[in-house]
Length: 310
Image (spheres, rainbow, N blue to C red):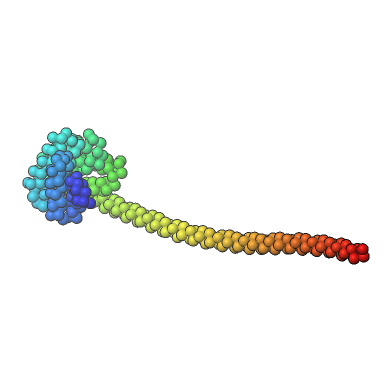
């Protein structure tokens, strides 16, 4: 559709999200292909903010494909674009991803620096989910630096924020981080305890999600079924109305036919009556004329007799 509209903006937007989809599917080659297409379109349009967003996505995929150094360069380019544009809130995205790069490389001092900066930005812009995840990332990094008490405290603080804000998935993920931290400390008892909490919460959330999905499907099914029933009822009502109209029309035609017949009969009899009355009148007139002629004949006969006698 974007191609038919010949819109660079929509082409770039579509390519970006296609890249995200292929990334989620684990197809990094196709993901990079679409993200690079998106980058080309945004560069042609000169949309710097989106260039920064796409570069961040490309950097993540490059790190996934073991091209870590290139990924770091791309992420830093993304960060620089946001900083140049004064988009401080959006710098948190590449900052955390750069922190992830240093974590994978085992450079935990640098990791901590970037994770702490990402957490501070989340706090500044009231991103509660970002705060919770930021604290967990800081905790995991502190554990790698053998600062276990601070690590546990940071992750637990993240869990509290996630609970307060109803971030169910983040809660169980952070319990997993807590279990991993205790395992690294060598406290297998605590690690097992929190791993059970993580497992139960995960199952609970997944089961609830499944139940919610089933409920949505059931509601959709019920709505569809009721709509179907309603359509059937409407069709039935329409049919009955049509039948009623036909019946009414038949009644009207029948009554109309009867009235027409009566009118015809009335006219017939009325005309016959008029004819009969006219005939009777003519007959009376003829009779009167005949009587008059008879009298005139008698009078003339008398006159003739008298004339003869004379």
